[in-house]
Image (cartoon, rainbow, N blue to C red):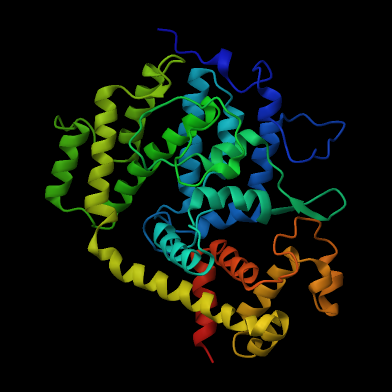
Length: 410
């Protein structure tokens, strides 16, 4: 069986290539530019503040003092590594998998999925819409993340369609282990639920399955090191991954390595990006094991309450500043009680509001920001609440804790 995807890869030979590399507007093109469009996306993501913040965002286990617990950044690098190996072997465009993998989790909230659930409650209560990290990832790369241009003015990232599509369609929660790309170049705003559509490229499908492989293996390794798994549960896991002969140990390498090789062996243009039936069954059983013994572990309960307390207190403090629409006046009144939070949030608003709504002393500072003004003139309370939610969603665990401590230190 021919398992080369070269003819359908997202390269210049692909009939849809121009659609895949389409941006909202053209990027500055240096006469000496040597990078292809997806490689440019990769470096734009790499240089973004959202990517840097991943090193202080929870993957599963909250432990900001430990140097050895997997963070969101390490997870992203695992996904990048897995997807690169698969793409290279199958002769797909590994520059595209690099870029999608690097950007796929930029929309994650502080405190991992627990923080995401708290923000989702706030979003539904105050804005009537769901918050989920894949959609928020697209929202962040389209509207929030900024880079200085060649005039040292800040602009939006302006990524290609294929990378943006890979970000919003990467959901790996569903047990679908054979993936084919969709045919339609839909408006990406049409996504209303996680995993609603498959990616439009085989490369996006590779990242989607790589995400699942990466997190189930690394989460187990951390759970073992933190004592989350009993001796009996480890025996159960050994049977699932079929290590009865004691020839290997259960760790990231053994779990991920077996699955990567299986995908490279079994995938084809006809079958899609897929695992063998046996390995697919193992993957789903490991995932089920993780949900029972790791993600549902009662030891997470104090952390969940801590995350909820921090996020809600920050949200309520900023909401109190609305002051019947006199937002900057309300922020100024509150500033003497929590100078750090208010000052940082005001700086955030300056970037994304129309200049005419800003107090005069901040208008000059706003001139360097040529990005989309997503909060317009802050003319409604909903726009202001959206700004609060976006601001909190972009925080690292460490920054959220520091901000919370500012609120309780007099």
